[in-house]
Image (cartoon, rainbow, N blue to C red):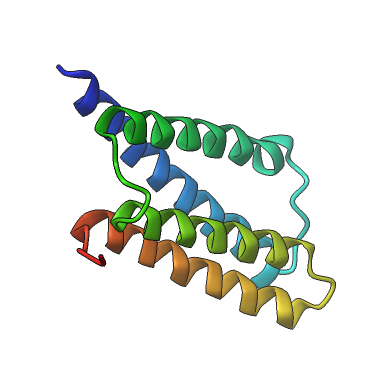
Length: 122
């Protein structure tokens, strides 16, 4: 098995784990209004997201993607996803937190769509 296939599959699995984890944590914290007290629930996603970032960087280096391509669009969406996610969990207002959470989920779906379809934007 080539390094590309291994990295790609690792990246896809980590992205799925990250997205599902974010969705579940947001649901518990923002919709059910319960605290995230388990350390694995609070800090585990940071490990998964770090590995996801490193696998994405490794794919970028291996494939030599241009920043002004679908990959650049995906990276801009990742920044928006991170911003909305941080805002959702740090918001003092439940309503604002829920809106930011839903925006983050929408952006996550957009990231997946861009990754799957690789649109030609330039």
